[in-house]
Image (cartoon, rainbow, N blue to C red):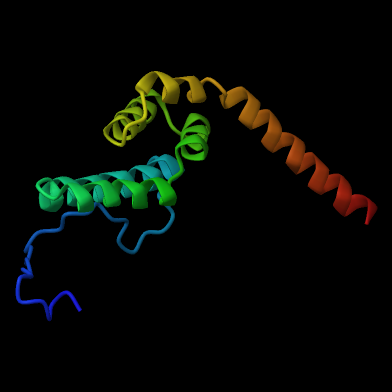
Length: 132
């Protein structure tokens, strides 16, 4: 539909824009934190490189990313799986999407609570298996 529009422009890029995992799905180096950052690196690069002059699409790309990687849950996941560099990068990514760094850093401090909750869920699953 877009290509049929006489005012549309098709752009070709000869170099990869998005960081990707290729054939390796294990993410051995930096695991889950790396998987999270790949989405941000890719979406934000596309948004900056192509739609910086089109406010509507620029904002839409941000919305897509925040639906794919919701702020609270993604920040909590990074608190559990990332190191200090990963957390700083994620806070910076979310700042570009309108979330204050201080709020994201506050979520990072909930790591202990998230880990505890995860352990409780695991314990419940084990107990349920034993007694069912």
